[in-house]
Amino acid sequence: MKPDLFPYLESTPVDQFQYHETIGSTNDTALEWVEQGAGDYSLVVADEQTRGRGRFNRRWISRPGSSLAFSLILRPTVEEFEHLVLFAPLCGLAVHQALHNLLGLQAAIKWPNDVLLNRKKVCGILVEASWTGDHSNGVVLGIGINIRPDSVPPSEDTLFPATCLETECSCSVDRFTVLREVILAIQNLRPTLGQPEFIAAWQEHLAFKGEIVRIEGSHRLPVIGRLAGVDGQGRLVIQNPQEGELLFEIGDVHLRPGD
Image 1 (tube, one colour):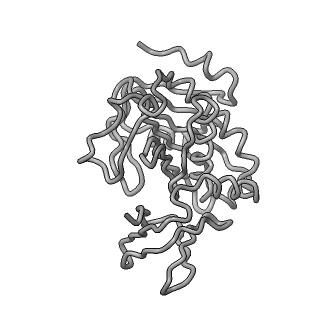
Image 2: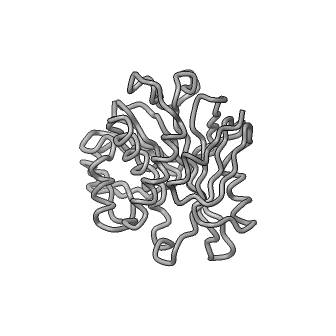
């Protein structure tokens, strides 16, 4: 049965939304909607995703009723266009804020775009932009949050341990209340994008900060070093005994705990 989302969204900046019982990918649908003229804070929500994806085209399957899968369309201002790479941590900070406010949970942001609870992945983020030449038509913030235990994939199907909100808080969770809180947090944090306070908040909640981590990529040998933080451009800062300070841009690299 189609849920009544109006009570959840009336206090948010969302003007238009689509709800789909089953969809291939909320991001694909949102990107098409951008091309058709969807406005700032337009929303696509799905009960089930059959072709959801994360970074590097990894599959993200959303089972009916078990998780929260949505894509939020933003129309970047000229100033925001200079910080497109920071929209992924914007989502991470928003999810962190929402989970803290709603459930008292302390989430960490795994660079560049996962959210962890007790060092297990509870949320995946995929930010994609629509372009015409050098002009960005819009940015799609794709967010998937594991709500119920049956949303957690088998361990053999994951590269990183996973969990869900109901397991971590030992309580029932209304996924559309989570949706509302995440959207409100995005609205609240958006004016700080790229500002020192934004980077400071990201640093404060960065997963594995101060720990030994492993950076793997397709174009270089693995690097092991201490995670020092992120810089103002969103690059990961690693201290390596042999090479000193190393910077990694968001791209074809993976971060793993050193152990």
